[in-house]
Image (cartoon, rainbow, N blue to C red; front, top):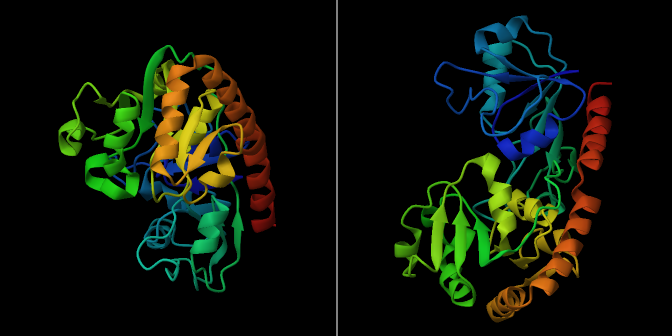
Length: 317
């Protein structure tokens, strides 16, 4: 198939484009949000082809995957027609939860609304739209955990701006249990913002290609996020063989089974777990092995691609 998809979510798209199709991604001269083109920080195959908007009318397109409400207008404007449409929702609902109406509800040309977690499907009001869940898939980075640094890793973008949503206010408590290395975009000034000594909370924006290696050197992965779909960084840390400590919110309780880490909404339980992992590298390794096994079983790439292949064939039948 020839599938039109915008480059919106780099990590998710990296897994999706490992399939057997040709993936057309719009590219504009400014490489803005509606025309990012191919990824520059992820490894994408040659089957991902950049196409300027003005050329899309002449392209054969079997299916379009929409990820943002305004993309439907772009389909009409750039293609002048509507091939079969699938709406992919990456996020948990925001605002008046659980009464948040999904943008795809009531759109007659959208064949299927796809959620990435069962929690999201439960919480979004999709109205009469046909919905399904295709859980995340991860391109396996390999078992790379060494835990050589007795520090905890956190991955979050824009923690200062996003605040309580990403659990930024919880970082001081975690920093008392272990020195933190917080990786992500726009993390500058984080330690000062939360009132923590910079040595106890180091912020780093490392290139995507270096992130997994840096995470794997830390003893434990901490996921303090209150409200998100399901952080792919959490699943990637598990693939790396890292023990994880996470809030029991949204889909985390499904993603992290017993033996893969510690999941709780009690901060004292979570910080005690961080201390335990720092004090006992052997225990951390054992739990990290369990985390990797769980992630490979549920979020492996082959299962993800098979699920999408079944849906794509059904939609275009």
